[in-house]
Image (cartoon, rainbow, N blue to C red; front, top):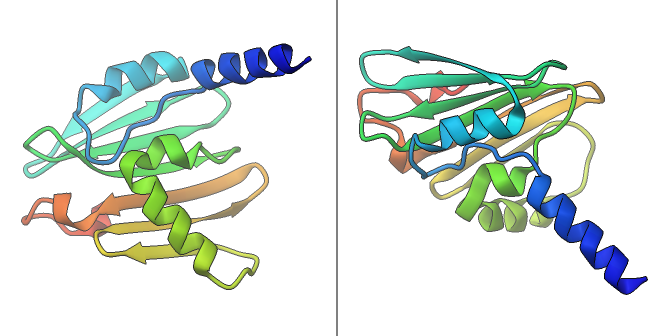
Length: 147
């Protein structure tokens, strides 16, 4: 029974959808599109670019990329919450510690820890949020663009 449970956990772990990871390369966009089985639309603006992955069923993930090719922000909207450990990558531990230290209450959550800002909220079938790393946001851009 233990082997079956471990096998299922391993299988689910390896088939979980990949999301853009803060601080990583723009190369993640195509792998994210494949894993989500979605469509990518990219827009290049003067000081950053946005790569939007849309999946049937209503999930949308936007990856905000600096001219250096680094993901500085991510936003999501859809009927389910994304896996924040995948979305935040190396920043997930900071987010988790800050979220656990908060007084528990219902409603949206906002976490600010040094460089990391995460805002998330919603309800069943209508979740949205954003995360960005302040030091990775280009100097010519406001963090408000991550939405």
